[in-house]
Image 1 (cartoon, rainbow, N blue to C red):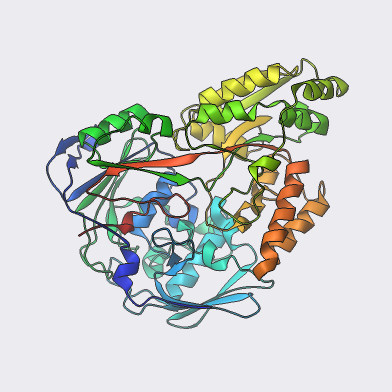
Image 2 (image 1 turned 135 degrees about the vertical axis):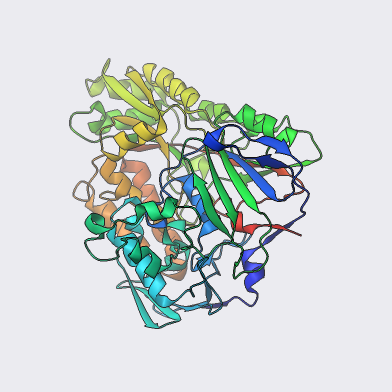
Length: 532
């Protein structure tokens, strides 16, 4: 496969819009901005999940959105095309055996500090991602990165890896200016997790280490994040002087802001709320979700859910149709962990059917009637299509009470709930997996011994056959990929310690003058919002 990029600017700025916008002036200390008439400022409202703007540690949605304005990857999604297109690379070639991808860099590409983008920067960035051993480091598992010359990079695997181009769309694989990061104490060495000291560089204003159309101005994970124009962007004209991303938790407030013109883009308005928007000055667009809302059930012996019968009963006892109704218009029933817009998905009509009586009997047979299960969820998390986790959790509690289980709700802020999940401390937890790239390979983390599997104490030794199916899917090529991923997905549906609830629909509300779109992974790419 040879994919070329004949027009750099067209690839970097895929969405054309007009410049008629309303500004929100930013005041210090994170106070609410006030609307004005400046067309050079774009304001985006989102319910924040922000933690780090260092590309090699980005694992939260807000940070990934922000990074699309500051940094660039070798390839990216352009518009609604699900095939990765060149960005910092001007072309790429996949080997016949599917084990390597050769990228030819665009020699015109430069960082904001004026330095050219070279293969040394690419190798440094990807090796640093691997060796920092943070959450997204798993992306580099099994991959090697070499640089035959200054403008050529080869990413390879010992086994066929059709997913490499898709993987390299992830913002965690963004390329940074190696020398500047090294000077700030950064390292790509094997001991980088202990020795790298460049973290503060990435929150420094206008640090110059990204190659995107904007630079960071301020970064406050609780209030707002501000970007400013990269005056010397190699990709052409930059449409806005400033972009302000504001932390607005309440969907109704997001709706009010975008209707009044105080903001131009709202990312977390549920479909049910969006149905009430009638203004001709606003665009309301729905996008199929690339993620599944699921229940994670711990297999740790200390948890009642360690019993397979209890887990099976929970899956049988849930009223999935009721949960879909609660989530709002456009929501789909999930049959497995692979969403319906990726290969390997299972049709909704083949999903498990609710059987409360059978579930009650299974709980009784397991001797678990009256057992108390602690249910963790993030009570301030509305990023997933504006769905209120409090309402979903309360419904699950009621439904499981009907089969004989006592569910004790443990609502905590996102940061607390997520850390408990990461540390393997939850018994029952409500989460979704925002994909890092558009390939079912990214969902293999749910397998036994995978990143998510480990959070519920599910090891490869617990399910060696499923682990083997996952490896078969990962290395499959061409037409063999879909049946391989389907087989793995079906095996998880039968045995894995998860209950798959629903696939939401993301609703993007934006000023018609802006014309914003989401990419195939339902992400907002700030570099693709352009003025006419």
